[in-house]
Amino acid sequence: MKNEPLRIHTAEGALRGAIDEGIFVFKGIPYAAPPVGALRWRTPKPVTPWKEVRDATHWGNASWQHREQCVLAGGGDPGHLSEDCLYLNVWSPEIQPSRPLPVMVWIHGGGFTIGAGSLHPYNGKALAARGVVVVTLNYRLGHLGFFAHPALDAEYPSGEVVNNFALLDQIAALQWVQRNIASFGGDRRNVTIFGESSGGRSVLSLFASPLAAGLFHKGIVQSAYSLPDKKRQDALASGVAVAHHFGLENASAEELRALPADSFWSLPVRLGNGPVAIAGDRVLPKPVVEVFAAARQHRYPLMIGYNSDEASVLEYFGVDPTATITTLRQRRPLLLKLIKSLYDEHDDHRLGRKVARDMAFGTLTWLAVHAQHQRGVPGWRYYFDYVSENSRDLCRYGSWHGNEIPYVMDTLTAENVQMADRPFTDNDRQFARRISEYWLRFAHDASEFSHQLQGEVIWPAWHPGADVTLRFGIKGEAAIVTQHRFMRLRLRLLRLLMRAMVKLK
Image (cartoon, rainbow, N blue to C red):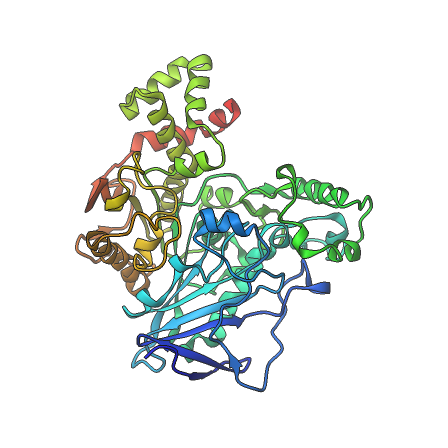
């Protein structure tokens, strides 16, 4: 029966949840104190414990953001917006299992500017029904989540400065999991963090953050982009420019914290953060790419991959992939000839999309699994190339950025505003079951000693010799196959040439 009352005790107080088709659901659980007033741009503080039973049957607030943009491109309506946004949600199939269940913590994407853990594609009910405890969370977005200014830095001792408040929120949520997930039937010693796009970048950032050590045990990265993290000095200059925009020439910390919370998401593009964290503070001392290039990430198992038409997201933001090919033809014709030979593609538009995809997403997957191998801990690489049956005329170049999410989460039956006129089919849903099984197997079984993942196709951990990639879909059709040395030469070339290519833009 749906929405039956249910009571759970946590370290902070009792919660009243509900049962939805046999799954225990708790929504809007505060995992840290509201980061408002004097707590804006500070490390998350503990929740004040409550004495009465707290209702946990409604979603918590999402961070301030552009609602229409989230509806259009972020997965749906994020709900009520507020600076008071540090809430999480839990789905569990069994509160008192015979053995604690694996925990999967989803970190939503959206360029660190839009999104919420309550969105329909992220509903944890389907995965929970298959034997895991699922947690989704909200965290501070935009300038509320990532911000640097000299007046704020002055509040910290030397070497203790914090700028990545969104990452600290995610760390606070993982600390909540360590404190409380046993009450929901979860195993705090087997926590998988997973996320897509900026959520995937968050996973990589947590792998690189000394403050996140010991709070999780493995990670899954979906379509994380290779953009460099923002340098702290650039973030400070940006923070000063934001203050100037609001008429604060020599802003004090108090004046900055007095600015209306809803004024930041509507700032001009030139004052935007960009979809990356800030490198150089206590949370992220070194850039993510630099940490993985040196194989200094935490020694946890990692699964990482990307989709066949990631250029779709670049196109959404007005980046023309064809322009890079045109520039290469004008400035580096020999390099273009080499790239064409590797891609066996002569149409500039198609070639541009593939090069943009592999440079912006593929090179990071290669770097990450190579770093895992160097670190002596397993990594698995995948490539998602399935397109739902009613969307194949629309997705002509492959699977769009984010298209894998409802397959991974097994939420093809959930409401999908963007694709209302292109409903998912039974074949789509069957393929989603097959794909999500690998995510579940990883959560259940992957450890630092694993050499492979079980499934309908055995998935070996990556190492340079075999260089195995698991393909979910081939040219839009349903298939799960392993492939050796998939895109090997392309990604090596683009990794070597990335700096030169960036300069061409």
